[in-house]
Length: 96
Image (cartoon, rainbow, N blue to C red; front, side, top):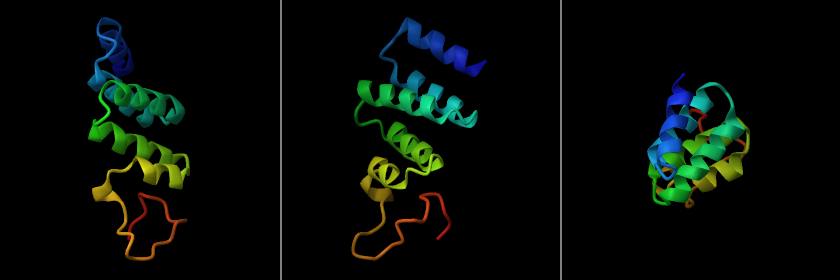
C-alpha cells in the first residue's frame, strides 16, 4: 500500500526525490533490493547531494553482498579511516 502512495506522488511530480527515496525504503523492507536501488538512483538523479538516498543505496547494496560498491555510496564520514587497515570482507553493517 505504501508503495502505491509513493508511485502516485511520483506520477504527479516525477522529480519528487523524497517520494523516490521513500519508495526505495518500502521496497527494501520487502527485500526487493534491485527495485529499491533503482528508486534510490532516481532520487539521486533529481537531487545528487541527497545524503539519505546515497546511504540507503549503500545499505541496500550491502544486503546484496556488494560490499565494495556499497562502500562507494557511503558519505565520507561513514567510511572507514584509510589510515587504519580494515577487513574488506566484513559487511558494512557488521558490528565492529
